[in-house]
Length: 204
Image 1 (cartoon, one colour):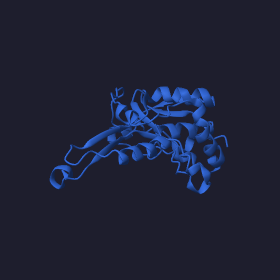
Image 2 (tube, rainbow, N blue to C red; image 1 turned 180 degrees about the vertical axis):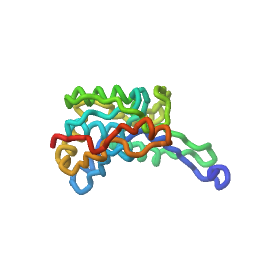
Image 3 (cartoon, rainbow, N blue to C red; image 1 turned 135 degrees about the vertical axis):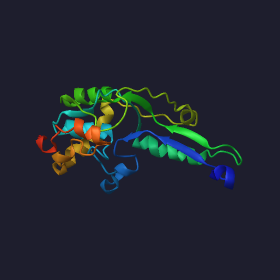
């Protein structure tokens, strides 16, 4: 609307799930570390798994884990914004759309990656969300790569950055926040009725 009506140059970034806690700039001072959510509402799936693994808690995979998600490291998120700002559409051109992701993975595959590194089990839980049990995500980041993005992909060695933060602050973890507590509808709530947030025991 704004592009057509007001002749604004508009760029739309389709954001993937962000993982990681630091960029090369924020790592210079602990006070700049990004917030780290691990709960079922605000915690992104990978950060959630890494927290659970560090705590010795089985990873909480919803449903079959067949949901495909787009992932991007926080450093690449900042880089993508920089690239988009420096490459706006020309005046009068249509809205420029970028897919701000590094790669796609199924949730169960991400869980296996973390479980293999942390030696914890994987628990398949009833899904608190109303979504397909399995899905594909056909998405490309070719535009960003052609403009200089060299994406960071999921690799066990790269988890060290997040694991270091988790281990340093895991004494602040509230175990009752690990299991999902919000449900997308009544049916989801009924299927998750057996989940007991107070039952989670952590190894701090």
